Length: 111
Length: 112
Image 1 (cartoon, each protein chain N blue to C red):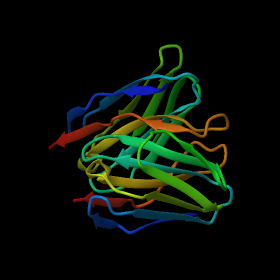
Image 2 (tube, each protein chain N blue to C red; image 1 turned 45 degrees about the vertical axis):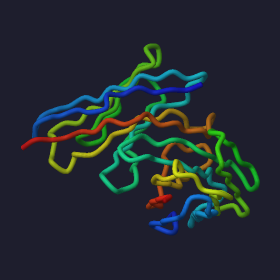
Image 3 (cartoon, one colour; image 1 turned 90 degrees about the vertical axis):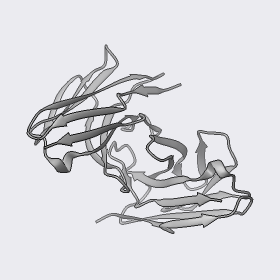
């Protein structure tokens, strides 16, 4: 089976940097994605890592270590609008249609 | 450009009543389609996914079913709703071989 673990809540200060970790167990691995979801809304895609290393997209970066079954999302220069839930997900790409999500991390940002 | 539609946005149904939620995608062909359910403050639970017309993979045994009668149409159904079926139902699609999921606006279902 597949399972993902991430912290349930994280609190940070506006302008700071925060890291949200995700560990996973899968029978096969086909990539780690990150999504953002604001209260009452639908998730939106942030990033995808198929290979080890860091992917940077503006203020957000995502890291993957396949040997450790571990990844993280790094958010820099935090803004109040970044307050949301963040989900890691495994699957997708050319080899796997099934996409499974973690339970989500609620990020609260203080002024 | 591609868009995904879900309806209705909200639904209140009595226990034991049937359910039909519809999802359609525009602007793409041969998408992979997904149904997720999200309980309040919780993660997304994968219910069904489909890689083609009539091809449905079920992830969680329960009183729900899914059908894909057309390439860009995905329907979630139940013959008799349970209280535990309440939640936020999200439809999503990816390009064949793609990794980015695009989500619809969701249907908030309350079973009373």
